[in-house]
Length: 218
Length: 312
Image 1: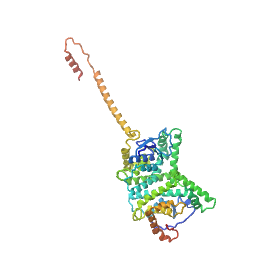
Image 2: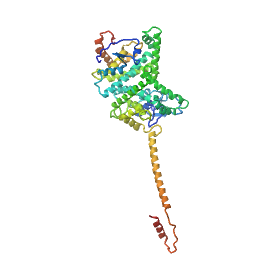
Image 3: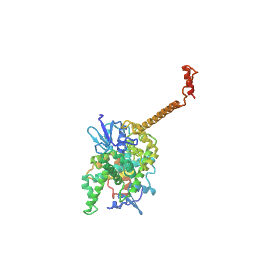
Image 4: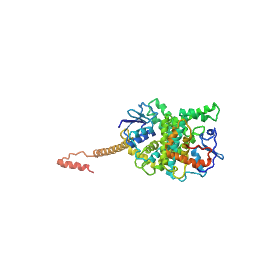
């Protein structure tokens, strides 16, 4: 959205390369910056920012909604991937351990699962059932949908960091094949969110990717 | 319909009905929505589990986390968000998430991890409300839980140094307070003139930070500079919590006591003065009534003579 030239590289040990242990991270010259927040600030320091046109109250709202997405959607995604037994067994273990030979793939997968479960317990999601998680996702999507309304982007004409964040999460939820489709069904209930994702994909990704890596939204 | 709803939560101090953020959120929401809650404070003799406080007990159900308790109250038709638009409801969710992500780690740190604060204020307070021998174990466990939560959500060694994490969470918390202050502006509550869920959450998180007396106070200082947030807390305390669990709020009771003391002192002073005057009167040099043989005064005249001698 900022028109910056980037090259996307997939690496198996990305998490270990990152300075904070989290992906994504960008490598610019001799600087490495990880996670959305610091990357946004880094880019802003270099002179590109999407949220300059917002006033103080709108900036506060944007930050609040970004936290909502982080809090609910991200945690729900992690939960579904790592704490729901069916998904874990069939998809996650296989996918996470695929770059490594046996037995490393098993060990790393179990280690990651243990870490995620520990985090869930610390923030109080340890005792939640899948239905409660889905309900939380539904609430979050409802809030986002109401905030978006009929506008093209969250803060009317121009996309901001919030739009990028929401697109990232919703697109992933909608296009990732899981044993359980309920999560994407919840998102699909909100037509304006679907339209929003489609619009951003068409506008920013298909013009450039020329069909190489984007998967069509069904 | 009005089944007896009983809320068990941590008690109060420093002018607050409770020093525990989550308990305060539920209490505030109950006051805003008019739910008849019977609040029972956890003290030394309470025999339940203390991990999940606050807990709402009705005749057939036990509900434990603040979000769930609020949902339950809403289902029972005690809804403080009745007049909010859909967009405001969405904003509420977003701001609550902001509070939990940005402010809560720093509040937890100030109460439970910062060693000066923890050992001088938090631990003694909680330990005095938990019977021995749990009082030796439970505060420590709560402190560890807080530290784990902060580290797991913000980054832990060996990738991060604890000092950096602390600096970051306080920066985030100050930014969050500034954002809240901007959003509140000059209005009385966050969405107009009636309080709602968001007001309950903000009050629950801010009030302990504002009122509890800590040795290490950097976040408290920052909060005190944001006068509209302080006014917000004080308003809610005065309007909704003037009569608390014991009949008169502790702050009110102190005021009454102070006034009573002053009054008693004044009365004492007055009576002392009167006594002194009496003494003066009695001890002033009086000539004994001489029996003057020649003077045979009438009793009335004698009196007036002695009176004349007494007056200066």
